Image 1 (cartoon, rainbow, N blue to C red):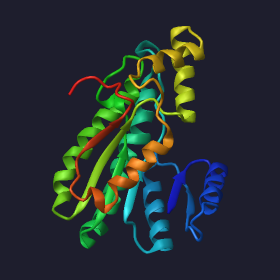
Image 2 (cartoon, one colour):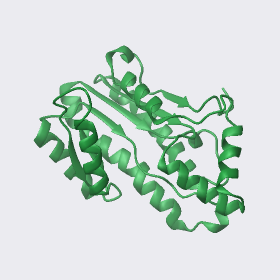
Image 3 (tube, rainbow, N blue to C red):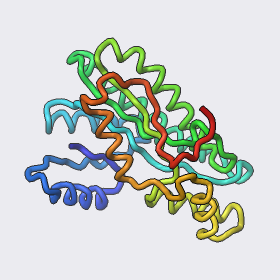
Image 4 (cartoon, rainbow, N blue to C red):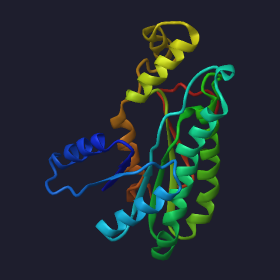
Amino acid sequence: MAIVARDPERLDKAVNTIRELPNQGNQVIAISADLTQAESIGKVVSQSIAEFGQIDILINNAGAARAGSLVNLDDDAFLDAWNLKLLSYIRLVKALLPDLIDRREGRIVNIIGAAGRTPRANFLPGGTTNAALLNFTKGISHELAQYNVRINAISPGFTATERAERLAAQTARDRGISIEAAKAETVKAIPLGRIVQPEEIAALALFLVSDRAASITGTEILVDGGQTPGV
């Protein structure tokens, strides 16, 4: 496994955690890179292939967009979100395609987000990014299917991560309420009455890249406790 992020200290901590898991001999490397920069994509791909010989599975899971009222957001809020998530996902997929097509084998999972399907007025940078990624995932799946390369999307709802804490703080600040009140409102809107745990997303990703999901491609699966409306 190759894991990529901008913070070297957190990367090293994650590597040590993975190596200490029960399956002995877990092979993992950390690559410190900023995926908002196009030149970082080549670095990630080349280092991964140099270490492991090839890349079989790509899990795109990047970043957090700023929340807030549109009148309080400048252009950079949108550009930052599009560069970090939309363009980095597209660039990584594109960089891997020649080899995956050559080998006629590959699995890609894009972690997107429920805001791509259900717009929120206070999360437009993230929502527009997610909507575009849904379009990309569905659109490219048709081209890749002929080469036995499957690509799917997971869209989590409110999930128990550091990012969720930051979004709650941004929402609270924008609306003039406490962070606890912002969190309580979010949980109240979830039919199951609880937020998603990261392990649930990981389990679904493992399923989607396994042979048990051999006929699933171009699909988005919502993991949000039943919160997203519509059909």
